[in-house]
Amino acid sequence: MNVVEMQAAAEAMLFASGEPLEIDRIAKVLEIDIENTEQILMNLQAQLDERNSGICLLKLGDKYQLCTKKQYADNIRDIMDMKRNAPLSQAAFEVLAVVAYNQPVTKSFVEQVRGVDCSGVMATLCQRGLLEEKGRLDLPGRPLIYGTTPEFLKCFCVSSLEELPELPEKEAEDENLLTQGNESQTAEIIEENSDNTETESE
Image (cartoon, rainbow, N blue to C red; front, top):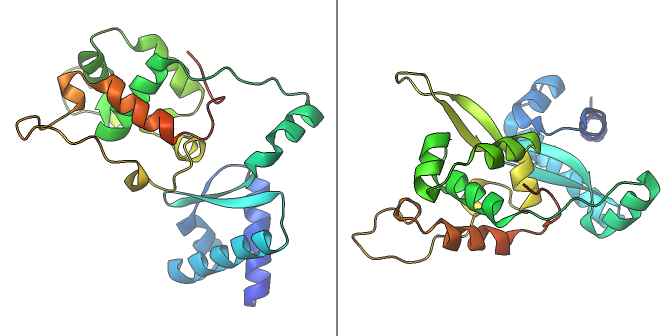
């Protein structure tokens, strides 16, 4: 395949998948290296922007996904008769903040930080695709550990966790803002960075 054909093939794969695809999987199918695959995907995004398409290409960590542009969300809801999701609760923002800045973490860690049971909130966030299980700790009981998902990156309009805003400045002796019980302040940072407050609610 030439470059044009590979770009078309990448677009077709992303469209058919409907889910974020790892760049190494795309590269393997196209039989080219990661660097050239990234260039092809950048060209695809530029082409979509050039023709003012209602579709955009999102980079979510090491994955890519074709999505509709946010300005057409109301049109899409109307044509598909979709209900508007309730906004994230403050508790959900706080849990996301704790996990996002400390992941991977156990549920008990999140509960220790927040001082309350988080089972319901974390279960809801997992159901909504914002959190996911990342494995188990090699400790007695083999507790599950959790982290954020590509859906989290998409909802908060960042390509990677490195783009999350920095935590507020703190005292030198305060090595960990979240573990000192300031998860509400950190949750506000994530909430302010969110472009989609209709994604999830507890």
